Image 1 (cartoon, one colour):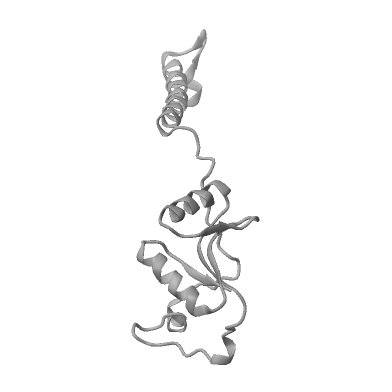
Image 2 (cartoon, helix red, strand yellow):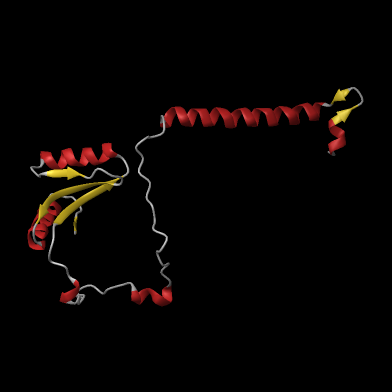
Length: 155
């Protein structure tokens, strides 16, 4: 069948009508399927967190993999003079673009008996304490991690 065979002298041939009908039904099916998927999935989540990757990340390639991997059991030697032990330390348990999400984590931690505060600017960081030395902060971090939360010390 050639394209010119779709039309006959009086108008559309049967093959032409079938072809146009199939295209119309296909478009209708796509629109109906899209509508059903949106109906099933519900409205889009307003508090969806999106991961942001810093631009300065260097891609790891097979030939420079040993520069990034530390074998298990090896210790890293950090010169003592590079560690700043003065100032205030906090234990950070989370950082969110949504204040609501930060407050949810804050409530969970407060229910576990921790004193928690959330920073005023975005990203909203969830912090525990203000410690005068790193050892106190490490003790608090270990306690939080025992309860199943991921945490790190910020200075």
